[in-house]
Length: 457
Image (cartoon, rainbow, N blue to C red; front, side):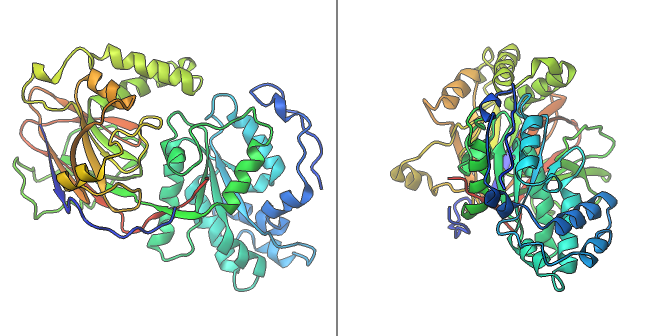
């Protein structure tokens, strides 16, 4: 069974944000044939490229994992290096976007510089934060280029929602250490759902075939207005001895920071295992997470089936039908009013749908709700019934079953006929073992500082 409790169901929170020439390059195939003969003006490139000594120093620090490793570049730098007006770094997952990711990586390196475009398989975001930005901070008082670059640098993430969340999580460490400003994040959407990208004006897909798409994306990344996004901390406390294979976004922790003052209806053993993580879009439990879990395992076992967003969605839909969601209505078990519970932070879910809906003012007042925003400190909690109900919700013919708005959430899970529960955060699912004797506790609270985003509109 799953029970929810919420605190501050309708708080009035203040919103924290507003919403050379390089020569000709021919890229054949992979949707890039239209880039043949593409030219970028020299001044456009220099606006994004850092001085050579600076980007070389940062890269050496990252590769050697040592903030002192780039010192020699500062000691030999000359006055011929011009300051960078709009410094950017790009993190790209070359496996995203079908077969286009690696081609996009090459194009970005050619337009900016090789040292400023990072393949996520080689350079991790936390390494950039610790050693790359650490290099700039070390030299900021002695080198004006380092000072201005650290102050103005922006990060572009080319990938799906999971990749964007990974980078945001690593940049969040800067808040904790009072290392400001935190670089804002822009998005080149290469994933399947791209709900984070949709929510901040970057669209649901990247127009590879459009000749000026890359240049336009970089211009928006450097000139777009800054806004904020709530992020949510999740703690899972489970009976010790249970085996779970958590997603990458969920890490083990020795400190189990659950609220001990709240009443627990079941029992908690003396020995517990704890995991924690952060999500930006949604957390869910139930049938939707089970379908996602099956889809991810199918894709890992047969990667040739998943060649891009369209094929992924077809496989996902087929897997949903095969799991019996459409064939088992809630009325077959009167104790079930919904088969999935979702806590939603964004207006976009499941590739751009808005299951919470655009609610009218009189309905909001009647239910005690407030208008939903991505930076209001509130999650929208809704339920999905059987598959047919979910289908109508996803095509926006009806809204989901509204449950509550909350500034914090606790779920208490216990086993019975079900030996496992299925949970997911931002599209990363896992199977959670259930105990008949002891409860599993899930707590969700808002991270005290917002993530910093670039609006692409």
